[in-house]
Amino acid sequence: MPNCQETLKELETFLDTELPDARVSEIMSHLTECVDCQGAYEFHAELREIIRFKAQKEDLPEGFLARLVNCFGEDVLPEE
Image (cartoon, rainbow, N blue to C red; front, side, top):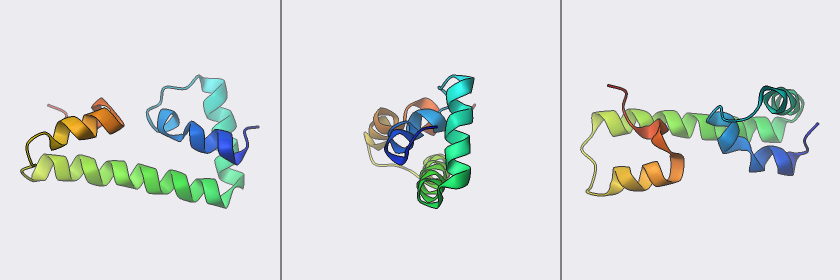
């Protein structure tokens, strides 16, 4: 089972659903037992949703969306 440091290190990859199934199961198990890591997961997941919503609804400064994509990947782009 991963420890907190390992879980937090892989959190973005986990949220991107880019981990092997076995690793996803290990991290899910850790998240159900660790309140601190669960809080970090919820924060990052909610932040992604807020950014995704805002990116679709408001005019963004020039270059801002490119910086978001650089940080979070293609997940921030609106689905067409």
